[in-house]
Image (cartoon, rainbow over all chains, first blue to last red; front, side):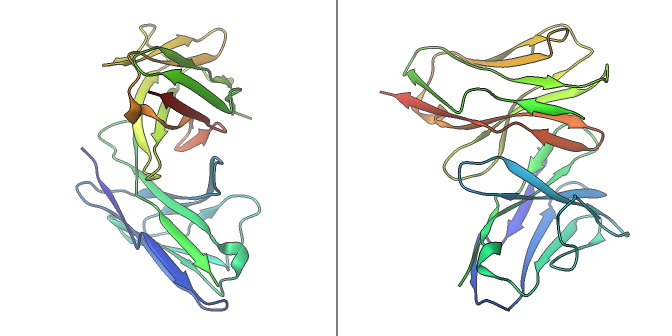
Amino acid sequence: GAVVSQHPSWVICKSGTSVKIECRSLDFQATTMFWYRQFPKQSLMLMATSNEGSKATYEQGVEKDKFLINHASLTLSTLTVTSAHPEDSSFYICSARDRRGPSYTFGSGTRLTVV
Amino acid sequence: AQTVTQSQPEMSVQEAETVTLSCTYDTSESDYYLFWYKQPPSRQMILVIRQEAYKQQNATENRFSVNFQKAAKSFSLKISDSQLGDAAMYFCAYRRGNKLVFGAGTILRVKS
């Protein structure tokens, strides 16, 4: 089945620095990938839709300049949290849909801690 | 706007028993997909089951089955013969265009 690989699984960074999270579709091409944020015991909140070769589409209230998304190839999307602050600490998850089916596959998530 | 409602924040079930998790949704579309995802403590999202709205037959995957009531916009998940490994947070989701809209989730605890 479709596999989505997400790295790193966890990262700790200092306030003011930037951190990049990668999301790769391993056995299928994903023209669209999705980035979510999840707080403990809460649902997934869609942050943005990453479109291969074009600009990402951000959900209302999500800062484009803080959460930079790049989808340079059909198998790779990256999320860069710029000038991170402690309030950016969260669990970030990516997902993609293999066009051969209707379901979505998720990466294993990244736990970001900003200190 | 499409919304997904899971009214049970937490549920408990005895091992080997059956439990049903509820989900309702709101949509004006006639053709769509519904999903149940499981998120265990590892936090990996795992697809449990999906239902295509144009299919009247309820989807089934081994011990997992759904009760899909299109007119009532209800999509409940039944887990039979519950196992300890079923303990997780379960999310109901509706596919809106190319996006998934999730419910708030239900934490399922399995007692041995």
